[in-house]
Length: 255
Image (cartoon, rainbow, N blue to C red):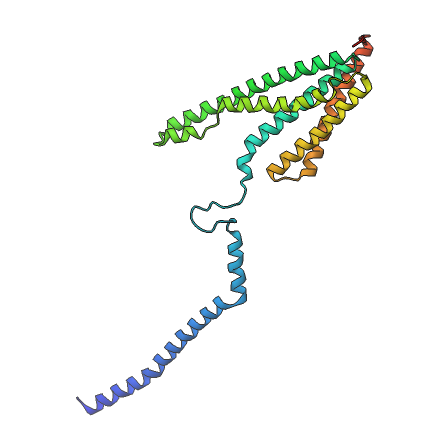
């Protein structure tokens, strides 16, 4: 090889060596920077924040953990609380309304019992028809979609019979409270007072229980339900009292 060319080649190689060293140094510096960033406290706090976003008990697998799914409770909770409150307010208001024009214990007892039976049947039929309509719509949609798992999808649909039974039972449980509390008390004033007191306790309890199961504020929910029940009983008593006064229907008899 020509000595002149050989000297140029050695010089080029010698000049390129520092550049390679700088590049390697820069890569090492970059790697160290990445490691330092990952080891920084700020990065650790970010990773901790990411971990907090994972549902409790989760972080892997199918994501199911110990977190309570309140939305899954919404449908049956609404039906149960609505049925119990409806039964309590309906029967109590009916007994107080009849008591406004008839002071006998038998009249209030019979009216309360009639309201309980009629209301439970009405709730059951209404819930059955409503849920069955929803059931038919969802079944038709499943058949139109042509889902391969039709049987599994249909099993997840709500049962109209169970919904009707649950609504009737909830109404009866709520209606039994004022009926048993005041239906057998002889003095008119004490009877009406006991019905109002028992109904108030039941309304506040049902409202608080529904809020607890739904993850809401128990005080606000209980107060809201209590005020609504008081308003219903007050309006019923006032209307019947006014009606009896105007048409002279103050029916009083022994018993």
